[in-house]
Length: 359
Image 1 (cartoon, rainbow, N blue to C red):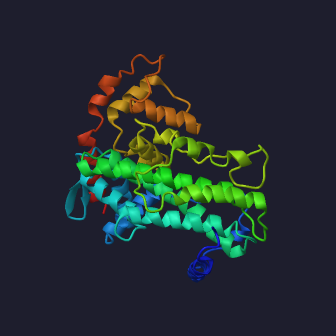
Image 2 (cartoon, rainbow, N blue to C red):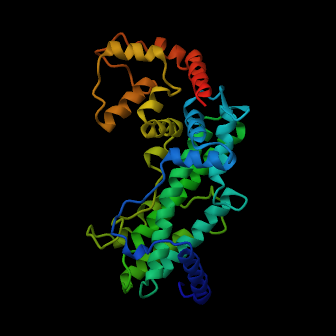
Image 3 (tube, helix red, strand yellow):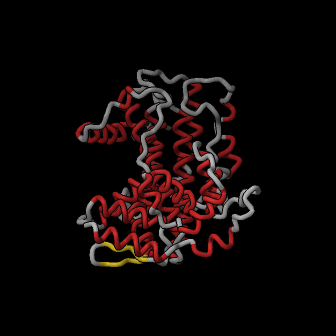
């Protein structure tokens, strides 16, 4: 099965390697087992998308626009040059730009390219001796998958906050696309090892063949078409013995429908806001657009909270946004009263005026 059209596939693969080397990509064969993927932070992803759309804006302006894009109310406006653009309109435009960055014309083209790449990687890593080129192809895809996952989740957060009818459709398409990307990544991680000069044995070949057959089912089908859940959950179970055989994922099954961020009601937009808040400096945080003077007064009455840990900060943000109940020992924290003025328009205009005056 793997041997079909092997020569053509090899030539195409070698062409990709040559192009990668010409671009100065590192030798992935030297990566350590289980090394954490390097992924751009969400604020960088959004800022670069803003700069692609508005190439004449300064870095300071693109950073400001990126923050307001996520944190300002969607019916407010963002000043870009001499224009004032509605936040919701810009959110949709930026999400669309990030979604299509690696696609020729439609988002589905990228998805079908992932299928072909996944099949090639499983084949090349299990058809005999693993070469450095095979390993580079594998690790290149894994790195891309983590970066692309972050980008897709940014898009999902922006689409989820939009009232455009088309945004809801595109959100659901990206949810399915992200689910399939995770399935393909798991298939690669469970059938390939992070080392070259490895001879594939008969059991590894048979295991890879099982995963290859399931991934191949997606070829020629629409994004919404799914393989049965029990098949995805139990894929590779017969080869699982609980031991570490050198795979990045030593388990079995590639089902991701039960992932927390795939559940109904999960707020990708809240997650996006939190990611942006975490990336802000203290100066930027003090002027954020989900924050008002009323909240500052309430927090002073609550006393100093221990925000030294990441989890404490997450809980604090969730409490302010109403996703956690008020602290029991702070009855003066009246949620309904505090959130009446979630956006302080006077403070917003004052800050905008200062920024314009300082240029």
